[in-house]
Image (tube, rainbow, N blue to C red; front, side, top):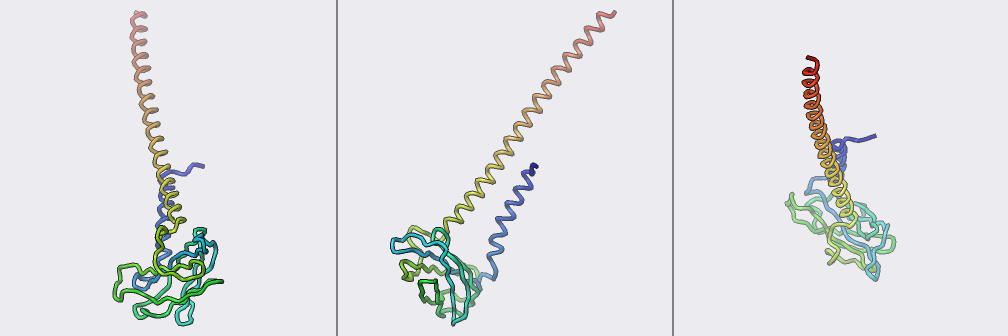
Length: 191
């Protein structure tokens, strides 16, 4: 079964655009993303480590580290939560940070970078690791390659069809001239 390229492209676009929609559960000024890495003493990633966040003893969010040690989850917090204690727990580690945000800012993403390195909580982005997980870059690269591959394949198909049509038209034109020429010769002979 062949799927038309247009339908396939639409499907890919819908899937890729639904990811941010599903991830944006609240208005920007109510979102508070906690992101970071869980690494061992040698700064090697720890995969599959659950992270749970509590504010005033209430569970507010959770996530799990991927194969790169990266985790990210979203909480629903307000301007009034500024300065509150945010307790992060893993099965082996625990640490506390304060909620930091700019009150009234409804356009800037509120992201708190919190890392566990050899069991110690370290705030801020880690040099050389950035804030985007490698898995997300891989997904984006794969999607780009997939879309690009389909676009190139479709362009090649169109060019092939054009060449075939041109060859058929040229053949038709040649055979048409040849048959017209034969008819004319045949008419002359009959007379």
